[in-house]
Length: 210
Image (tube, rainbow, N blue to C red; front, side, top):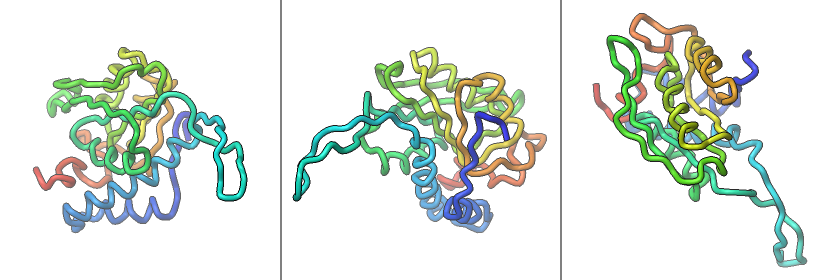
């Protein structure tokens, strides 16, 4: 396994992922499962957040207790499917600052086309977590992280639900300094750039579109 890659093998994560893979899982349940699994993945991607201490008064006595240190997290969603992961992460860290990068994949070239970018301020002082359910070719993800770096971010993580080996390698080549956290790495990409066996198009399955 590449050094920059973490696969979260927790039984609850894997169980929910299996339900999401099932073609018979309806849109509402798919969206609910994505929200639940993203909260579980968020525990892993935030595992090494910096902490400090402050004094609190419990009902029994004062104590120095751990609290998060530094600027609030920044979560950056790659539209549109990234919003499914974003919702579950905000359940866990509701005070996080949120940004959006709009990219779509040209179906002929498989290259990303940017149509929107709105990012929080002071990214150089924040942990930035970029989210997108599928790391397929890796082109859109690599482009989004380049935009985040251009805005000043230096402490970046990438979180996805599923990855293909090709996408993992593309990210390693383009951004070797960015750790990737995922629930699974599947077999390969097909000729259309979709992850196999995968779960189909995450955005279409979230929103009931084709």
